Length: 318
Image 1 (tube, rainbow, N blue to C red):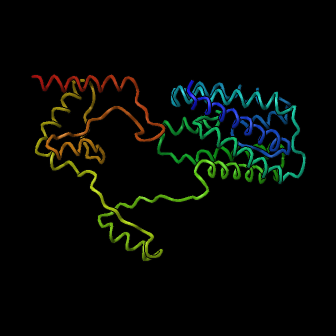
Image 2: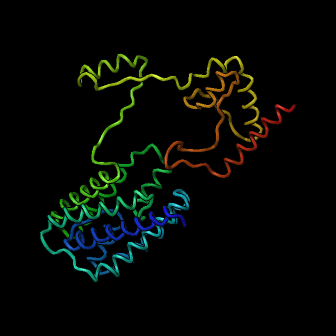
């Protein structure tokens, strides 16, 4: 194991302890609802005395079985490690330590800050504690265009409302929303810094005019335009060589793939090579969710694309 891996493991362990302390020693002690599987475990703990760590592991088992293939082996192993640590800290270590028994509002604020720091350490090392994280990431892997924040917020609000209904405590709903808002804010600040900024992508044919309008609205020097050639649309180089497209269509049909010819953006290498005199239309790869953390390609699709490339080579050899 490399030094970086030891460091990551140490930070994950520290994050699990801090996160568990924020929930157990502050939120649960003050009867403040938390979200996700931990929130459900807290309800079971208050109702039936079931240890939170034990119920957390039991509830996570079916979630793990359903999402393992979607999330990948390495992320899965790191998350299971954190999930088990969270259970050990919650059931065996933290009960031996004092819990906060003061003002409920202060417990909400302190617990949110402590829990947010712990969660951020876990997330910054590409891990999680399972539960709602697995569910939302699994949904995102299958449906990448769904708004991740909306999924998380809806699930979180559902658990908070359930807690308020079970214990008939309207105040707990307010404290629960505050707690989880603070957790989210601390996570964002730790992961993305205290100097927040926003990236806006402006698609325009007249960059100078767009910059001039931004400067007019927000002050001179707000927008700076730097133009650099990246690549050009390869259509003008491909149209005279449409036999390449026809060859690709035949190869696809021979391996059971239905051809779909569409103009796309992207393919920087192909565009540059096309303008260097080697026309390079883009072929599919079988992958999904490109250029993101949920990018993947099924093994069957890789095999199909390999056969497709082999067919193209046979065509060239004939």
